[in-house]
Amino acid sequence: MELLYKEISQNEYDVVREMLLQDIETSEEFLWALQNEPETLTVAYIEGEIVAVALIIPGKKSSCLIVFVAPQYRRKGIGQSVVQYGENKLHKEASKIMTNFRADNEVSKRFARRFGYERQFSSAYMKHTEGRFAIGQLPVRLYIDEDYPQSHALYAQAFHEMRIKVGDFPDSMVEQPSEKNRQGWNADAANRFTYEENDEIAAHGHLEGNEISSVSVKIDLQGRGIGKKFMMYLCNEIYNRGYKEVVLWCVIGNTARKLYDSLGFRELHIAEFAYKSIHPQKTMNI
Image (cartoon, rainbow, N blue to C red; front, side):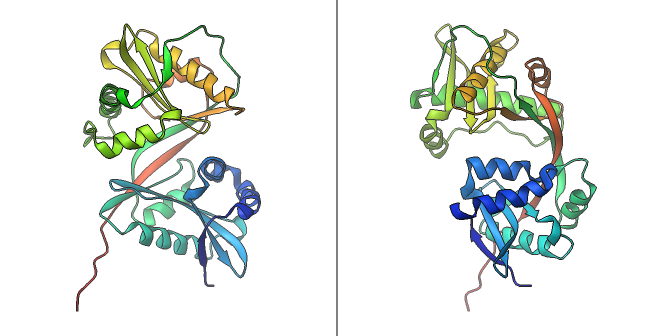
């Protein structure tokens, strides 16, 4: 069976969505991408029929590759072919490839191990469906480029300390600012928010579609209720944008889990995140 690959087109969305809904337990991340970041999806065809979809996100430090095969086409070697295709696309520079799967899915775990992916950490996928919070006016505004030095510094330090406390990230380092990173934040400023306290930046939050992708509070201001109020604000912002639910990932061992539970988020499942080191493909001059 020869597989043909192409980036997903809008006229394929309904077919892919129907395929994903055949196994909702393993397709939730693909359904989110289909709604919010379809440019990350590649479909695989056999004889004119879509049989698999790959989520491929290149990155210099870490790339992402997750594969979904239609249930009726599993155990036919298709998953292996799609993984190899995705890895070949990501072999252009030295990096690591990340994948994830439900921690209780032994089939997916064995599949990942067979391709050399080893666990680094686990994370809970959580959802809030209870609607807006009743909160008063908060000192929150849209992020602007001038916020970058302070916002990035508190974001980088807070996440570094979380990773160290969790214990699954022994090589964690504080992310350094860069002009490229700053430009990326500025380009996405409509989805970034700044929380101010006593005329200083106290917290930074980022949204991706209906997902709260990050919330970080300045280390010396933690424990004052800023994180809780900011979370409620960000949830309301997502609901105001027309979404019916708010989702987020919480690394297992992160003490913020208590806050998310108190706000009414419920755990849908725990995913294992596994990494594989890759090396750039080299060409020989003859």
